[in-house]
Image (tube, rainbow, N blue to C red):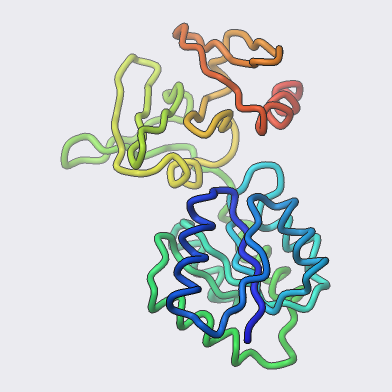
Length: 249
């Protein structure tokens, strides 16, 4: 049996992967499903899994930080990610396995089989450092963001985007000129595409451009007011992280 831990910040993603493993990878024993990086680190240190299925983009402690804090542990990592093809090339070069979301059953089975066959010379620390070297030139945010306009792509500066709001499996992009563009992507997919300042996810349903904040209520029911007058709640789990960022401006 392969002893595994699953780490993701989204409960639905955890449950889906757990079900997939239980149904299609009978040789995998799931030791724990962890919502967030902190719980994941504790599970790795306490349970000593053979394999960790690890999401990358998580609030507070992301997948890279989980690896950094546990790289001396003896386990194999399989990233679960919606990263673009450039990052995927980095995974391949570093020989760190990955699964693109939504996870395909055949890809999952192949990743589990590969983990079973890894030699005892597997060095997580070496693979992690190699991955960081490959990703370093690519994590810098691009200056332009492409959004659909009919059959065309129209390019916008980052400060032309005021905020982005989730609507189930769609996302609404609100521009500073008052225009709204709807994308057939989840907010998490959008977040991974535009990661970095000036964008900040302050709620499960909202990403904002911090350059267009008018004021912040830091009380128990914290919220921001944007330059267009929109009030947006700051989730409790993201409040401290947001305020730390805000104080640096």
